[in-house]
Image (tube, rainbow, N blue to C red; front, side, top):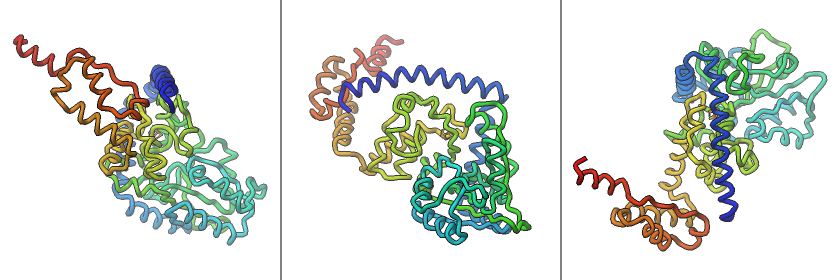
Length: 387
Ligand code: SF4
């Protein structure tokens, strides 16, 4: 990006800050007209998700125990490759060549569509032998799966399949079925933006059922990298409602394409460097104006803006930045932490800053304009005047 492109980008972002404020008002209107105390609901929802994450290993094992009691099969997949291998093995074993496939965010992340095509599996079978679907949440204490369907037809197609295959990432679970009503409300408002629930369903495999089989693929695909980080692990509470995208001025400017990934928007800025790799996705953590709209709207109370700052800190602390960025921040630090320099006049500071910065950096950024007096000088004057 050259300087004029960058300026245009910033200009568009600032235009979209106003638009996103309107969007925020719209969404907030719907939310406040539906819930008496939305903050309480958000707090409850985030506690429920954190409760699962804080003890994720035991909870997942308990889910497996409860679901296998009902004769469902659980497949654990660490990576995309594991998942691919296990799924194809299962389809081959059962001689399945046609499936009813319902694309979702996670199936896109796993590139499932192309993967099935490359194996010669065709979509939409009339016989309704096999369906592949991503539920919204797994429920640990009952070994159930919670889903929202677009139509009765879609629900029947999945529920009546001989082989029901569910894929779910390791983080999309809650511990207790009694908490599910919080999420039905949240999904209906935040995900689809209307105030009544669409067709929701809780499916618990039945051990007496002999005519059908249930196979559940629980996939990690990089999420355990986030689990090991105290702050960033909060991003795993995300339920992919997409509300943060609607109110993000940067996302409204750049949209999906620059991400080159199925996960996009503010939460992707936090997660992708850890789910994918630092080299190609680290820059996303700098892809934010930190307006805070995303944190305000998030129904899971994820402090997205703070996590973006945490990522930046992480990359500097672990020396993962490019040479140029390191030089830039080292120079800024040296400059702005020097009280003598900071007390100089505004125009002189600008002049000195221009001297300090390397040419390559100067080309890329706009130098800040300094105010005439610093807070320190104003405070000193106030003290002197006895104010
Ligand atoms: S981060 Fe929050 S607002 Fe954004 S998609 Fe996830 S749950 Fe929704």
